Image (cartoon, rainbow, N blue to C red; front, side):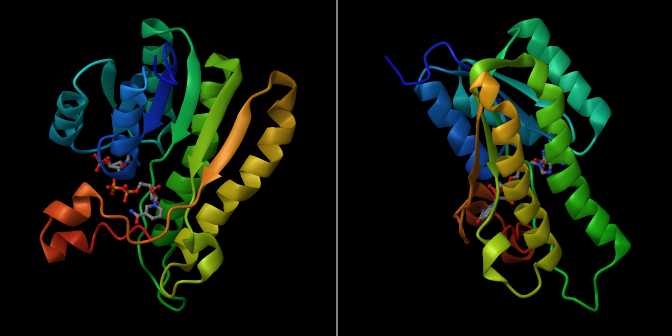
Length: 204
Ligand SMILES: NC(=O)c1ccc[n+]([C@@H]2O[C@H](COP(=O)([O-])OP(=O)(O)OC[C@H]3O[C@@H](n4cnc5c(N)ncnc54)[C@H](OP(=O)(O)O)[C@@H]3O)[C@@H](O)[C@H]2O)c1
């Protein structure tokens, strides 16, 4: 029997990369997973095929509150609960101090900080007591990689959220953890894309 037998997991950004590998492993361990992707329906469909069983793909932008409502309505209707929320949708765009635009700042904080916050808040009524929230941070939040100041600050905010949320949620025994991957993780994006497209996959 797997470690996650009977559990329901929601994994944002689960259509590729680290989160897809996690979704595969969750299913191998017995969970049912909902994975999301924002733009590329064919990538989401491929991911669902690759996982093969106990999976639903829900297209939606983790930075868009209506899309999050749609995601959690779908989970509510199909499974009625969440045991594991894995908020992983994120994208590292580079811009050095002096060249940072409002749009760059709003995109990074809009997805990683605002999007993650509302993902957790909207999921909360469905999360079982004793459940688990996992946020994908980055070593960038503590390393000071040149060009990734806004991304790093947004990932640092996740560590701060986690410290507050675990105190707020301890009465329900909901755990909150932040993963801190280090670059470069050899995701599908990095392995399969041309060098030019790979530069767009610049999550450090
Ligand atoms: N790879 C690394 O070396 C590394 C290092 C440190 C931290 N991280 C963090 O780990 C997480 C995954 O990184 P990765 O490199 O594995 O990513 P990836 O291969 O680029 O995959 C990102 C996934 O997230 C989805 N996505 C992007 N924006 C989204 C949005 N607004 N709403 C919903 N889904 C969205 C993408 O789907 P669509 O394209 O369809 O939108 C894609 O499925 C990110 O939070 C990243 O910051 C990665």
